[in-house]
Figure (cartoon, rainbow, N blue to C red):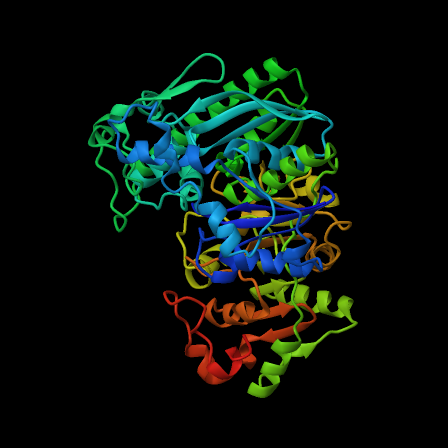
Length: 585
């Protein structure tokens, strides 16, 4: 049975393909439209995923949608009409509840059975069915899905069961997003900036933040609604929040002060403490040693580390695409299990689930434009050795190999790589390449078998969803945060042979099988998808070199006019690269 899961029409639309219960492909629509967090029905992503695995839409037996459209619309209407009773007439939920089904048929060209699950079922399933656990406790936490913001459950051979939930407007995700907005950052985008800012602060405002959320018995908690207004998604708070916190909100262009750092640290602390209390409750309720965790809050890797270190579970699995995109996986997995009575018990170890591309068209375009490059076809060892030498010499390299990653992290398929030992590397990449805030840390990728030599971590971290203390922070300044921690990725040779070989080659040269690994994109844009996107990134991100499959280009060899094409505002398509090179797209 072939089931395609779809998440769409809010943000970060995506699709996932399961063949007889095995996850074979998944991709986000933003990578193809080049619009970050693209919400539209994922027509391009679905075509790319089906093409990658040799299927067409005619082969699909079921499409699974990641939420209940009617229930979600009823909540949206309630938000727009805040005086409406929560038990609104059922007909409110039917005003446009058919839109997802209509667009699946019209835009995806599918005329077979379409089945929906609830949003938090999709989150929970995306974690459990990828965990490899025979049974597991289930935790989901996000801003909101339909009416649910947090859920607790069990997973096992019979499927998943959610036995308790917290309902909108009481939400840890919305609490964190409201503070994100208060600090002058973008909601549903910049929450990770608050997490990165937190170690620069002190927990001096914990007492004030704790008044915003009451931690109740069991799985429950409650936000003080006098301080929040979720009918205004760009702001999310009332003036009372500023009075409670003790300072006016930060404007986007204002400097970040110690007060702002302290607020970030304090809300991070409160989030961690409530999550720890809730996972302890979940452990008591389920008796399981295993935790499967998803939802947007699960992308907070600092809180994840606290759950791992201080929580009651001995084994953990966090969905690498923990946000809405991952709901496509969960929806497909639930529908497959319900329709067939079976599921594939296998732990997801590789998030490279998107399409791969041949470089033939890129090479022909470079030849036509007279751009020199070096081909390493059939000489992978030489490619790895030369790229490792470039990075050891201080160069910043775009690394594009194989299938594209699914989820928000670049994990060695669409990455920018640099020397983690350079004292100025982080500032250089922040200022010139990534064009982002100086306080945001970069992550290390490390050969898995050597991880314990450099980091205080005794478990695998293949998806960059955990943090650990750096054993010798002075040796790795470019990837060590201000508190001595790093959000690391462990790379197993059995999972990603070429990236592991590069880490090993760099380790042979330097003694450190570790590279600074950040996503291959410019600020405000999605991670690159195609070789053409990678070429645009070489120019616009001011990289020193680009390794794309078996060829390497150096920025110094590009035509002189290309060096002036550095535009951090315009999208990659249709502009940014001379027409004669981009014409093959």
